Image (cartoon, rainbow, N blue to C red; front, side, top):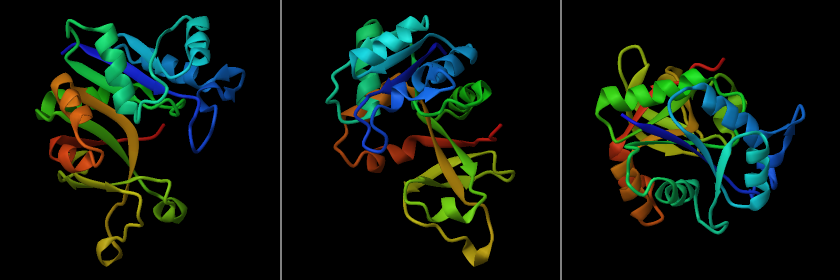
Length: 215
């Protein structure tokens, strides 16, 4: 496998405008995320930026960024645009999509999601973490993952994702928070971005999950 790690970033975030350049102890958020991805040692790391200011911040820190159309509808579309510009010969067969708002992510989790893709034969792998508080369970901004887990709840097949509240069967069982990190086989990413807007309906049969253990 020959991974490339792409981080989509745009300034016009609806929840937090200017998020990529948000200051975290003197360093822009996008630069901290880029550094985490670099530390994973999986392959080249490139920010797929929607604006020149994001490109400039990453390049100032010594990283690589490419400018993409700011009006692209999703992060998946943005990384696909960057990938086709960076790698027209399709040398990279695995594409990791790391959201630009995970500055505290353990680089080991990036390696884990690529290992899941390699070991499972799935086309898309992602991560989920246990929900350990009531506020997250009922928060509509927290995406919940429902999966058919193996016996120790470390790996499983994703069934669906939802913003709605989830209720434990008979008050028992683990509820899961989806972590915005994906490893795609390149062909699966190409199919994914060609789907109509209700993309999870066509993608969910490809997904595998791994348990995320926050640092």
